[in-house]
Length: 139
Figure 1 (cartoon, rainbow, N blue to C red):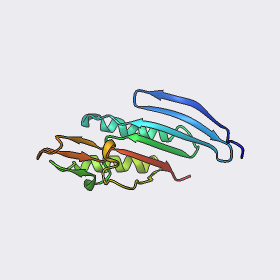
Figure 2: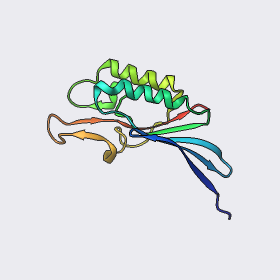
Figure 3: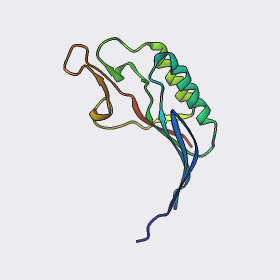
Figure 4: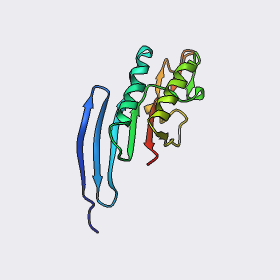
């Protein structure tokens, strides 16, 4: 059995992302971005616009994964206050504009328990949110 050869080429990086081109024998070239969305509510538009910019920087098939610090639906949060609708709609629009689809995950409802953001566990203030995701382009 022969071992597949692979190459990774750094395309760009900044504080909130690292973008690489990956080439694997038999699978061709594709792009992967490790992403971290701004956690501050007042910077969410910056996160969304960064996704849009990243999406337009290459035509390769794209996988974007990481901690997006955002939710796509109200049921991705448990505890305390509801997630504001403008944040849900803004993130959904950024994902759509970027040509991404959510690959989904199986298992624990809020990603994996160890990767789920949670605060005040075991109290009435306990909050869980699904912040970690994997998206891919349709091509």
